[in-house]
Image (cartoon, rainbow over all chains, first blue to last red; front, side):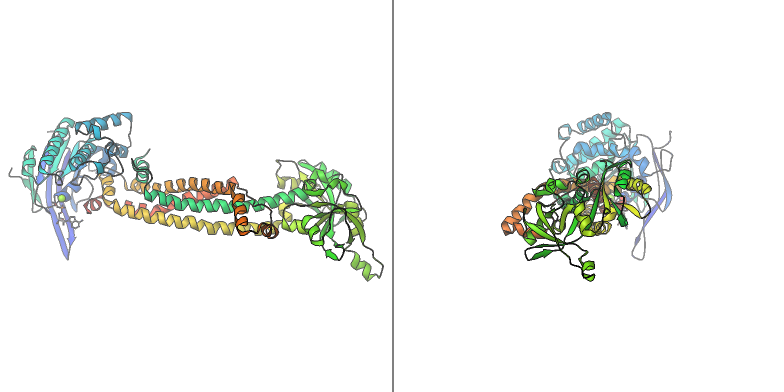
Length: 222
Length: 409
Ligand SMILES: Nc1ncnc2c1ncn2[C@@H]1O[C@H](COP(=O)(O)OP(=O)(O)O)[C@@H](O)[C@H]1O
Ligand SMILES: [Mg+2]
């Protein structure tokens, strides 16, 4: 097997809580192969977001290590090119229209050329928002906003997508559509996917299902 | 364009909205401060500029002064004339006299002019409102406007001039008779002080009155346009004997100019506080915006934005407001300066005291002179201050941890 896109070893993370510490992650190991899709389920407060943030390099573990494609450099400079993130609350920049929100990912990478604009428009077309390119987030529905966020996450052709309950703020039907889109986009972009979700049906659509309980990852009972 | 500048611009001018409140109010605050600085500095610069004009027009750019009267001034004139950068020189004799007309007296300075050379150095002729400089001879004088009014003399009247030597003569018990001279002109420069207490006669009249014989008190020198005054002064000094010195008009009026400068600097400093206060409001608005946008700032981190660039995004907003405010303030201030006399006229008309203003003000019109250096200084300081205003919000934004920012609800 080729080198994993993402690899986490013995991740531990605790937060100060009252007098003691709240042990959220107690030794998490995870390997994601190139193009693989994995779902992580777990109760609310079980540490799914904490884990995802560690995998994204947004936070550092107490002990353990995260490496992207074999390298432990998980800094901001590398993040822009290596991975894309999708969140429950979309997090679009309200002052930017849909197209500019997608392009923002590329601007941060620092390479805005005509080809990038073409790609952003293509991605918006892929998520069915070709006609809404110049609409502000405020004028888009929840499902549409999340689809803009999907396009933004894929803008820099990342090798990995981290999605934290992307359907949490959407109704059943819209959410189902977003998951379909997410999975097919990842397949066609050959990007690996880590999908945190509550929804068993959504989890079942990924190649591998994991469950986070008591701070450790185990095989999910799909 | 780097992403943080693009985002800063978009936050000030969101797509599809014309001019959001925050941008409008912040820019307006800065603009008002800049406009006021431009207007006040313009008018104060105008006063200084007019004073310079009056001094140079009536006495040339350089004065030659001596400890004792200069005997062979013609030779000195030729010597100075040949210094590179010198246009012309003219001798003068100057002292206080008593002027009497009817039962009214005044104590002006009387300047003796060499009619052959004075017009090559000064523009006095242009300021003669009634009569003419050409009518001047050894038995006539020209009065400054306020002086003529105060003793009630007009062109054609005969006035008595008493020499300052009267004291010596009185001490020696000798009889002293005043010199009777005709008024042949009224001169108005436009500066209350200069117009209230100066009279002009020929150099021979002055030499007689001051007992100078054929000596003079000094020379006025005009330098060629575009020459550096200090250079020419240095060159003249190099050819002068030790007890005779050349002074630029800045040197001659250094105390006056120093006070003028001090006044300007103080006012500048005080008015700058308006810009600083405006900058504080920019800071507080940006701080609010950082708090409101916490989660988006977290998102920028998740997208791979570096904290220093997130900081730059907020600093840049301060910078843009500074640039915008400077431009708007400059336009506003220069427009106000262009219409300043209409405004003054309107005020005096409403308050119905146009002549009072003239009597107590130094000038008959509100002067204005805006130097490029002053404008550059105002704009540069405004932009620096506005950028500094973004510093605290920027630091706040950069110190937000993406994880915590994203968690905040
Ligand atoms: N910054 C923090 N400080 C203190 N406690 C935290 C912090 N972040 C998360 N937690 C706690 O860690 C636990 C896991 O949180 P989280 O990873 O968000 O769970 P999930 O995403 O599975 O719902 C929760 O009990 C939460 O209260
Ligand atoms: Mg969560």
